[in-house]
Every structure is written in structure tokens, then in C-alpha cells.
Image (tube, rainbow, N blue to C red; front, side, top):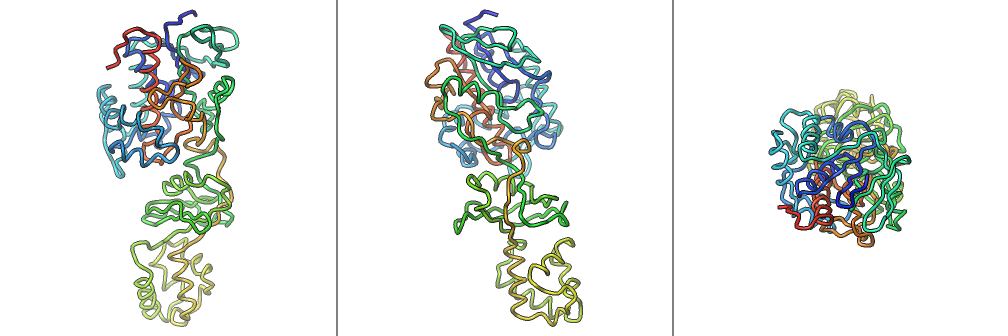
Length: 417
């Protein structure tokens, strides 16, 4: 295929489909290459199959939720805002709804509706899709580029790499884009898991399945607090997971064993007030076993463990608990500590932290500064954010930006407004 006036997009995920649609809407001839046989495979499983497509917040609030290279995202975030993404999907016939935390979902609660809307938009825009075609190499060729799948060669005037990260490799994200960048001499930062469950040194298997709501999780690096938020988390057979833990993992960049996790099980009650309440509980339940007297304070699975952590015999009478033991128990309720041992494997991460160094890219266009006509968008670049629709917003903002710029690169007088 010889067409130096066309745009190639590698990867039919969120960023890739956004880039292909935008480039085609600008009037460019676009070919979308996808190694799998389906569009948006990872997109289809996000949000537990519901697809948290963006977050209904102003651009500055979105940027505040970007935990890695937020300044790089400034231009793209204001060029293609969360409101723009919402309007885009509604224009494609997908009704949306906004839930707690300004999370935006399709009204149907079906991620497939988002994937199908993008798939049909790709088709209707005139994009040529080449499925089950894994591009193995990209190299410069005169004023354009040559792509190969090992058997065939394809020539294009501009290339947008949207191959994703290393998370969920079964969906096709195996890091191909990093190799493309490195062969052009473009720096790639270390790839680490982000939005990832955490294994703990403590055996918490007997708490597996327990969800804690309205607790505060604090992460400390030495004496420094790097994360502290109220919300929901989950104990698993290996450690902890859930929204709070996934968000906290974004802030644990160095050796994970240098951090500590601390759960405030009663964040709404100051320590002095909680201590007074414990005095009343122990007095009123003086003749009861300690675990029975305190059973209403905590979820059942935690009652005995909290007593053990405080060094209190589960069957001692509540009225016999000393002031020192009560202080220890208070400490457990307000500072339930866990020791991180390791992140779960990167293929279990929601997103990959690290990737194509943003210093190598133009933040307005996503074009590589040293290789004109080569663009990167989505998870393949070194930008990531909290859970809540922010990472998909990154994909759409960077994908639309790259698609518009690539169309202008290969066309004279492209109309992208």
C-alpha cells in the first residue's frame, strides 16, 4: 500500500479510534491497524464492563487528578475537555449518566455501547480498518513512513502510535509502541503498574472479601504523607484492593516496601470522642466478653483481629479492660496499619505508569519533536491519573489532538474545526 498522503493509526483502542475518527473528520485518508480481531477490547472491560468513559469536571479539576505529567496535558485537556468527550458520545447516539464522584457512564451501563459507537464512527468516517494485523516495525521512508507486519509493507505520510501499555495483555496491550519509540531513539521511561492492588506482608486472608466503606486510607513514605483519602477499599486473599487502594498506588513510585498503609476505621469520630465512646461501651458491656461488647463497632471479620492487634484477650470481660489496653484498641481503630510487600503483576494493573517520555513530544499535537510525522497517544505515553474516568479522558484528549495534527500534516488546507 503506497499512500504518503494518508495517516496510519496503530491500535484500535480508545485513543486509536479517537485519533482515527478525528483525522478522518478533518478530511484525511486514514488506515487503522489492529493486531486483534476486535475494536476496543480493553475499553469493553473497563469499569467492570460499564465503562467509566470520562469524568464530568472542569479541565483544571481533571488536570488535578492527573498524577504523572499533568503539565504536559494542559493543552490537550483544554482543547478536548471532558465536556467535549461527553458531547462527542452523545452526538454518536450514546446517552450518558453521571454518578458519584462525577464519574460518567453510558446510561445503559454497557461498555459495549461505547465500543460500538466508536466502531461505527470509525466506519462512517471512511476509515479503512485492517484487523488481525500486528505491525511489527515502523521506519522512516523519504517524507513518510513504512509499516510492516512481517509480510506486507504499508506506506503513510504520518503515523499515530496508540498501542497501549502493558496492562491487560490479553486485550492486545503488550508494549509494542515502546519498541517503535526506542528504534527511533525516543526515550521511554520505566514502566510500572498503576491503579494496581497491593500485596501485604501481613496475612489478611481471613479478611478476604471484606469491603470497608467510609474509611480513610493514608499512605506514608517514611514520615511524609503522600496520600490520604476517605472512601472504599477491599481486603483480598493477598492484601488490599478497591478504589482507595488503586488511587493510592499512583503515589507509590519508589520501592513499595518503603511505604506504609494506615486505615482509619472511624474517620468521622475524633480520637478523644472515640475514646469516650469506648469508655461507655466497656462500662455498659462490663460483664460481656470483649469481642461481644465491641461487635457493633466493626464488621464481624474485623472484631477479633482488632482485639488481637490491641493485645486484648477476646474473652476477657469488657469491664476488666485497662486504660492502657483501651488506648491500644483506640490506636487500632484509628491507625490500622498494613505493610506493602509488592504490587500485583503489571498485567493486573488498570493502567501502566511510564512510557514514551513526554519531553520528546509536542504537548499540543503529540508529535515527536525529533521525528516529524510520528505521533503517540493514550497509555503508551508517560501520563496517568486516578481512577474515575480520568485515564480514558487522557486517551481521548491525546487521541483527538494527535488525529487533528496528523491530518494537518498530510493535507493542505485540512479543516479540523
